[in-house]
Image 1: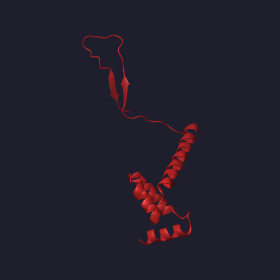
Image 2: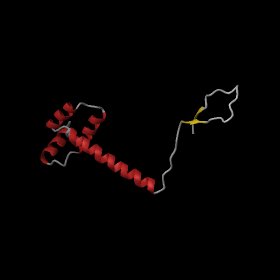
Image 3: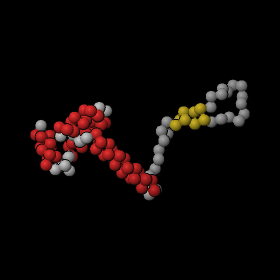
Image 4: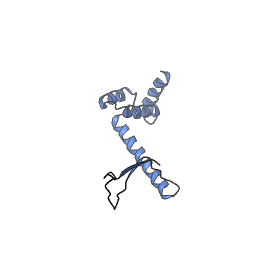
Length: 107
């Protein structure tokens, strides 16, 4: 309780001191809280607004995309596949073989 009250008071004096409110906003967004609830909590100073949460998610997505792009270009990444399907077609059909050519493989 003391941490939340201190954080609300800090945000009231400085708009950039909103670390707890930002984390709480991201959590509320991730659990699909309605925007009306988020905006009500934002007016109380408990969280940041829904627009701020959306901008933060967009900025984090761009940062993640850039990190993945630079990792892929550095050739230090490897890719792994798990549970993939392969369609192996037979050129010579026989009577005892069915038309099922799809094979489920696990790597």
